Image (cartoon, rainbow, N blue to C red; front, side, top):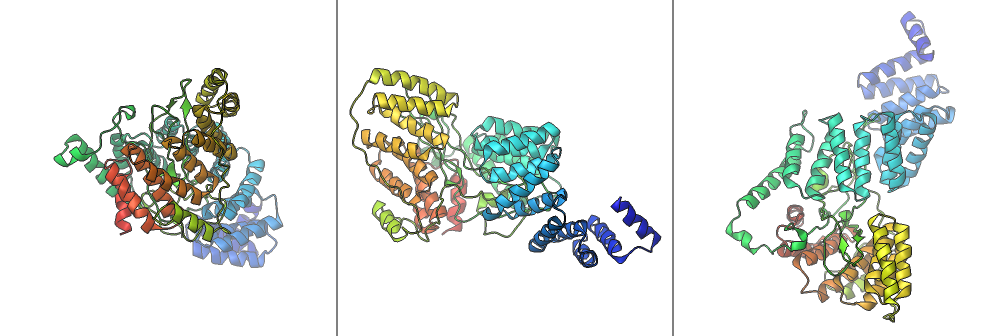
Length: 571
């Protein structure tokens, strides 16, 4: 009725100047003339200072004109005047979400929660709320939101794309691919799902021909994506690699042989090395959401011990389904760049190469390190350097208090093996709490049971109990101090728990003590350590030799292209 009244007054040409300015501003907004709309709506709010709708429209105009501070102030003024103006909750939540600042995500979540409480049938509201929760690494809540959006509209490509990102966080790669493909079935030219699918196929599944086809489809979009040149460079590089594999030359004879357990594929490692924060991309209030998944784990199969892992974003996290014999089984998977959903350019530090090719990428909120990062990290010398750096930065960086347990005495191995078999089945079925409980029972029956201690670490890691995971790995290392797997996974757990200095020290120790380990596993350790130096400690000079070592040990590593770009950018 308000709109009809304003329209009638405008048509009659005798309406008050305030409603007339509001209607003119609304028309300018619809025409995309945002600066002019801001000017006209400023006049409207001066004339109708108590009108919440006028302030909301002013907020929207400032929002679209790239004036976030003014937009936030206008939205807040609208809500102060009318807290039940749900569209202002939505617009303010979207604005805060686009800014992607950790201290604003809680506020964005509150605003979007308020909107969905009033407008529970809005798919867009649920998608935006799910995006905030995904960015905060609350995957369970995000998954519910995206499913709610899909229940309201099963053909929603944005919700399907968001659900695909959830599946990646949960390490369900095939389900993630299915979600991205479903999004494209609904909207074949939906750029976020198209690029995410290409990245997932290249990284997680090592399906490079399929990934190349998706890159080409992305490059064929009209109008051209803003990152067309960078994506084209990656596509051409991938094409050259595939051609080289199909027509090998003499130089390829020097490539280390792949182990049978890996099916002839390169050993999985982490995503692209980055020396800085990825670019913040945003769009207007009508845009699709944007985020990045937290680091999904990588896997590589071994014969005698639980699986060694490296995860994306240099925040590695092991996942393993363990058989009753104690040998870990998992999907061999890799990642090139964390797939994310769509956004538009913003103003944050310069992104890394793979972040630059994906306009839908946004750097995730850090989850690995709860305390401020040191200005300097471990030097490229040895573990002693790591200790000295940690000591110098102690007030700012969390350090791990080692338990340093003695080697435990033997117990009832027969009883422990029964518990172990049940625990392995529970872990395979993803019943993590049961797996932790049963592995703990196995270790209580026989504390010297190395496989039970190590797998207890894996299960506790997956369930988020880092105290239990770290203790289990310490005990496993007390039993087998030279276990590459246990020490590597211990380092990964330290990274996730925020003890990055100690993690670097463990990796330095691991590399010094394991010269005879397989090239692929050594490459993973070097890459994990390089990512710590580059990302956590901001020491590209210290990271460079480790990245170079990855190429030396595994020239056809799935990350080789990205590493070469990083080395080129950090001479």
